[in-house]
Length: 266
Length: 41
Image (cartoon, rainbow over all chains, first blue to last red; front, side, top):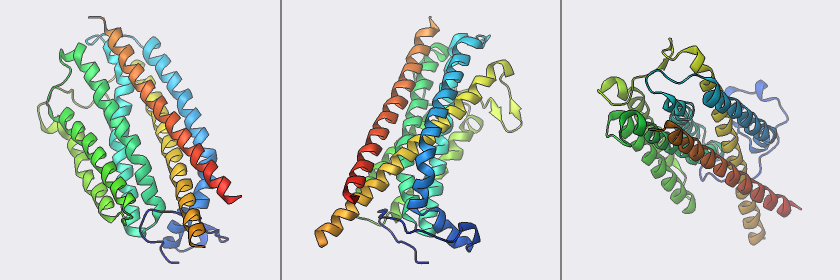
């Protein structure tokens, strides 16, 4: 099966009659990345993720704002945790997803992977920005300052700028009909920032508190923790819905472009 | 210092930004899919 190379442009996907599970592994990747098959899954998943996310967030905000007790040290300001932590999580995992999509594009040359990366970038940048903004608002009553050039805040700000740079580069590459390989390499190279952001509170003595939630458990009392899981789940579902909406828009735009080119050539 | 002003500001920004992006993404998706559908006919 020939790989549809470069450009990030998608026309219409061909129909595969054979089950993708019966195909050789490399062919399965292409079959699952078929735009027609993707749209068949994405169309019902978009409202499910969106409204599921909204419901989970309503529960999270109700719990976080009205049901949990104030923190003994920070008072009520700790309630910003329920939006700040999910924003940080999605800012970081957004770049991980973008890098995986870039890697898939470089290895299998499938344009849908590049469309996914281009759809993820603005959503990830939004959550990185929200992490910085909510952290700054939380910092004022807690630390007495809106901003501090410490390891965690500065590395997150750099990640946000890297998102903006990637978006600008991808747009420029798309407009001049580039093959997207440099953009994909940039996406993979940007992953070096992720451990720096993650471990900045361990490597440097920062104003930002150390990690409260790890693989082995959490230092947050369970009575204050449950809305956080709802919030992380809700924002993650919303993130997925936003990415699917943006991917569907790009696929439709590419189909229109391809159709117009064919009509102009005829 | 009243913490609730900070909490309200943070939540309002997050709800406004994510709601705004959801609306823009939905409108862009609907416009693009309608254009693609109309060309197919």
